[in-house]
Every structure is written in C-alpha cells, then in structure tokens.
Length: 423
Image (cartoon, rainbow, N blue to C red):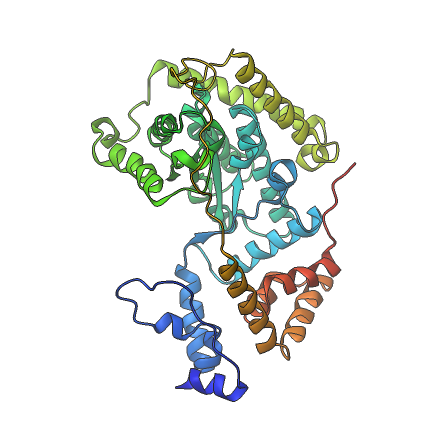
C-alpha cells in the first residue's frame, strides 16, 4: 500500500518488468521496482537491514583500471581518478565491514585475450595487484583488512604454462604478502577465477572448440582454481545459445561429478613436469617484474605504453605462427576436413529488437522524470565528495537511487576528467 501511495502521490507510472516471469515468482521484488528500501521502511529498520546485508553480501567488482589501460580499452575516466574511485570502494568496504565482496577482480584474462602469452599475462596481472596494494597502503588502509577483498581472474589457454598459472600466482603472492607486507594468513591467500580462453576458439569446425575448452577446464580444476567459467563452443561466431551453454556447463559437471581423478584434490602435485614448470614460470615472472621495475614500476611503464606494446608484439607472434602453420590448430590450419573446414557462419545473431530498445529508452526517460527534482542534488553531492577528497563511493550508493548511469558518468567527467591515451 505504501508503495502504491508513493506512486499515487507523484502521479507517475510504475516501472514494469519486460519478459516472462519464472514459476514461483511472488511479485515481491517486482513490487519494489523503481523504489528503494529507505522510502518504504522506517529509518532505523532500513539502517539495520543495510548493515546486516553489507556484512554478508557476496560478489565482485571488476573495476581493474590498470588492465583496462593496458589491454581492454574500456577506460572512461582519467587513470588517476579511476584509481582513486577504486580506493574509495575498498575504503567503504572496510568502514562498512563488507568482507565477502571482492572490491576488485585483478584481471589477466583481458591481457591474455588481447594477445599476451601466459607468462606475460601472469606477470602483468600480479604486478598490477602489487600496485593496488601499494596504493591502498599509501591511503592508510590495513593490509589485513583489504588483502582478503582482492581477487584475481586469469585466462586458461592451451599452452603448458597454463597448467601451473594458479600455483605460481599463489606462491609469488603469498611470499610477498607475508615477507614484504607482514600480512596475516588470510590476506596471503590468493583467490582466483579461471575462464577458458575465448581467443583459442575458432570459427572453423566449431564443435572442436568444446574439446579445447574441456582441456583448459581440466588445467584449471587440476590447478585448484576457486571458480571456473567454461566458454560455449559457438562464442567464436555469435552470442551463445541455450544449447551451447548447456554443453559448456556439462564440461564442468562431467569433470567434477564423473572424472575419478578430479575427486582427489591437487592430483598433479609432485609430478616432475608440474614441479619443473612451476619453477620455470615463477622465474620468468620474476624476470618480467625486473623489466617493469627498470621502467619505473607499473605506472611508469604504462607512460611509455610498455605493457601495451608487449601484448601487441606477442599477439602478432601468435597470429604469425597460426597463419604460417608453425602452431598447428586442428581444423583451422592443419588436418582440414574433406570440405576444407570452411568458416562457420551463424544461422542468426542474437540482437536486441527495436521493441526492446524502445522499452529500455522509455524506462530511462521515466527514471529521469520521476527523480528530476532530486537527481541534481545527489549528483552535486557526488561531485563535492570528489573535489573535497571525501569517499565518492559512499555518495554513489545514494546517487544510484535517483540517477541513471549516464547522469552519474557525466557528473564525474566534470570533476575527474575524461580518459585520454598517452601519445
């Protein structure tokens, strides 16, 4: 009744959910569409629920600005301001006792997908991780409070080094956090997610992609990753279908539920090749650390685009081997089928319909209209927090109740600066 009254008062149309509702939906969540809890609950009740939820909420922010500049290119704010925002998120997590939400997914996946080899992926990612540690420490945060909120994300390709990427990462990270930063055992633990390599999937004989993904998933599970994403075989040509996603999921289920050896944790520990590879990969990563240090650390190296150049060179090298056949890819450059293994084109590419697009635009217009009297004040508070060196994330938590993403971005451009690549 209270929610109905809120809309009746303002004389505005309630936002609606587009699409079929799953069975068993009781409509409670949908009833709150467009309304935040603080508008329908007594202040003290809302505050209590918020505090308790913050302490248990799980998830990950994938806001690793260093890999964006180095590899993925989805930068919108100046790197310095984006780093500041990341620090504000972590600071807010400490102040509000958010223990189970990762404040950043320090990502090597996008570095590898852009063309880096496994050693470079691992070295650049860990170096980026240590840069965040140094920055958060410089802001007075306690290593034991923010260390457990950091997570990592790697790509697993087909090269042998991927068999040990996790154990090398954990070894280097734990040694540094223990001996250099004096962190406690919980903060020394490196948690990482693996996604099988999208770059290793090909548009020729796409069914073979599931075989590649299975082997990459096996690398990940044998190396004790904390979580795993298996790519769908048709991601090389289109948005995955329900059928291809089920097959990708089956890869994990069959390894976890049927494969006998996988029931034993760490089945490859102690094998000669695994031990040897671990030593070799660790040594190679440490050598790359030296090269980064010589260039003034991660941020110094970024000024001359060292990381980007390295990734591009390695990408070109891989493509060269692929095209001249020195790196055999079955059904792509060798062992072609009798039909010549032509590129598979998708029957249909899933795109948003015009109706879906218009629905979304209308929803946005309604949001702007509903909160036209309160949005400006919220945006002003966000800008003031940025200018006066207060916690921006704290104000963002309030601004998102009444503002669209576009409005917030525009407001932050004015105080944080837009991203420009160094020339």
